[in-house]
Length: 553
Ligand SMILES: C[S@@+](CC[C@H](N)C(=O)[O-])C[C@H]1O[C@@H](n2cnc3c(N)ncnc32)[C@H](O)[C@@H]1O
Image (cartoon, rainbow, N blue to C red; front, side):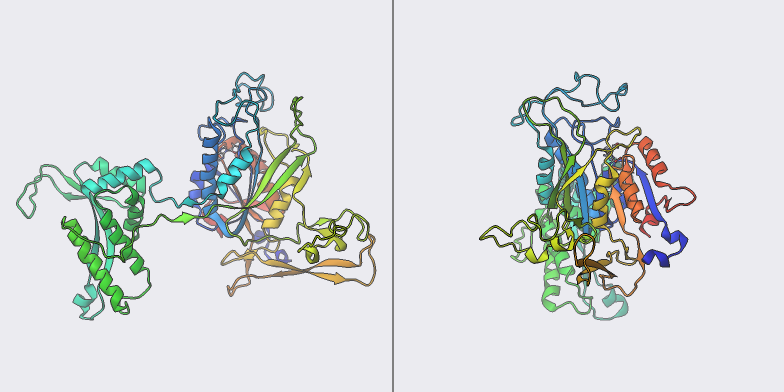
């Protein structure tokens, strides 16, 4: 195995525990980072984690769904394209009984004394006594495509910024012909977009920076100075200017709300499209160069308030649409020891869901590693289910391993609820999530350069003798191969994330499986429990790192 060739230090898995709101903390991580995410968010209206930023205390199911979706968008950005998420979520009823919303004074482990605190919500479709169906509400919302967020997060701020640009801003194109002038070389002119807002109220421009995180404010003219027309300014004047990509980011964010400067926005958007047609300044084809020149002339006219008709090849800035999650499987977690719920007019619900979600239709999945044993003898009547069904043709007949003593893992998993004793009341059992980590990370590790997991191959092999279970056909692990074009064969461990770390069950499973781990959690107290759980002391197979750079190495 690859671990053998590594030094003692490399043999150890690393973990990084970060305190804060997962949607904020994740911003520190680059796009396409994590191989696997295994997580369980707080369920709606069930427990109080005593933190103003917590998920789960929203007053309506819709708000909860919206917040989950928004956190999961940040998870999606940081998930590798070949990565997968295993998302555990449970359901509840719209009623006034049961437990909900703890208060600090609780003395029954995480559950409310009595039920006075829980009230059925008034909702247009979810009646009192209705099962809310939260897992599926969340799953369907996660499948929805969405507009890629711009550099301005809130719609109100986008609208405000657009009206500021309409009134006091400028969207323009700068031409630079320095080559031609300075070096007397006849390269073609270059064109770049810029945006500026000028104002004597510096607070307004500071707000622009606050909501966009872009650029800085410069003092343009001091009070008392006169401009080229001899007009003396009475107040200091400030300027917020952005060039190139930052200007284009702003353009994308404000376009839908612009009123007077829509044409300028189209012109700089089109310029960007032309600039992206990767030519250097010597080789820009003539027709493209002519179009850029035209855009430059047109935007000058627009900014001088001259009437302008836009040519048909000028494009409107498009909102970028990101496809939603691929919902690949709904795993039913059948609890062997569910909570008795006292209902006498329906069965007891003893299950939750684990949704397998991916960013792409193709992703890493170690099928071999999570196969399960078949229960029955190969040729018994319980063999392959379709044999006696006339007219049934199963496409996957060739691909089943029933006769090898193995079969693809099925989607209902029986497991008792966690027996973890600690200050946390909603942990999941390590055994439940072990197959999730095993399927979505490579035992062999991933390419040190591009992070692509090494892939296992296996073959069907016929052996001379029958084994104890009565099989002479076995599936044989043929080892791993690298699956990327990088020259190096060096490997590192895969990286697993839990954005709702709790006590770090996902971390424990990831580290036991020799992977690296990042856990994000609002409550310091739980992070301390996780730290104790993950840090395995002197004979360690894991060690804590303290920076994002260290965990990504
Ligand atoms: C269901 S528990 C997770 C338990 C975990 N799977 C375990 O086995 O220990 C959800 C956790 O999410 C945390 N949490 C709630 N809102 C959060 C947020 N916005 N960002 C990060 N953590 C949050 C809670 O404090 C809680 O510990």
